[in-house]
Image (cartoon, rainbow, N blue to C red; front, side):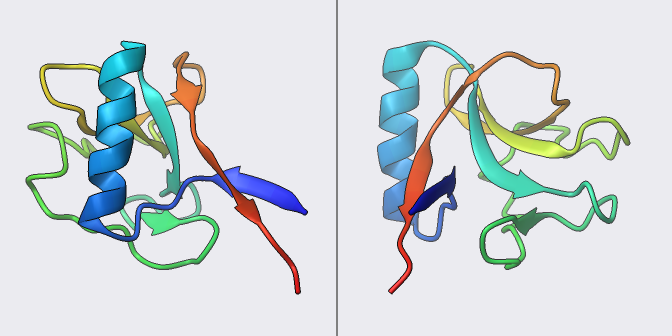
Length: 100
């Protein structure tokens, strides 16, 4: 059994993580990246495309900077998505991967 950074597949999951984020007061890393192809955001665990719904992202994000390849919830008034570099400190949520 292993674990991956969390993949947000529903609005409800996003709401729950937002709630926990508000109580931690820090950035929270999520399991998505555009490391392979700049601008092609995908959930690492599933390969599914990340929603580019503007209401999820901080204004001006993603900003297409090549070193900002990882998705996190940005600590602000509302936890919105932000593309950050691997050197940005933050918390993370993982989900267990079970193999039958």
